[in-house]
Image 1 (spheres, rainbow, N blue to C red):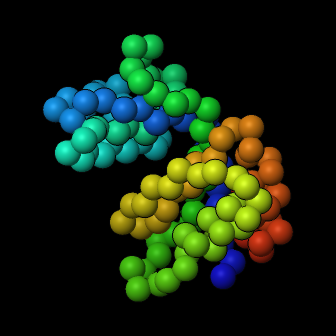
Image 2 (cartoon, rainbow, N blue to C red):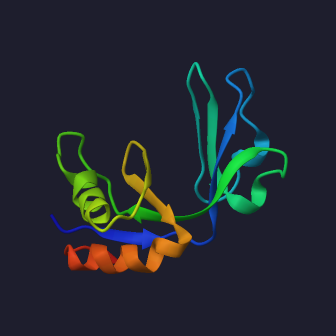
Image 3 (spheres, rainbow, N blue to C red):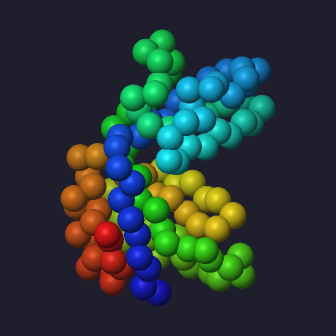
Length: 125
């Protein structure tokens, strides 16, 4: 499977808020963001420059967008990206939407990730 991916501009952050917290307005701005709630936490992924200083967060993520949309019956899409990164020792944070997937890697690993994905037959724009 050959895929095309794009690098989204900017630095991203993943933040943790309490399970009873409301989704914060600062997390719902920019080109790409997502908020997820479980019984244990509220997680927010957004541009790093939007996160207030007093929020538990991990900054330094670069975002890669897989060019979709992909049918739900299509198998192996995300695995075709994640497995080469895993084999190269590059950790990821993945997010799926209705149409496509996003894979985040540490900014310092972005160049290596692009190289590894190219070697796996993917095109990174």
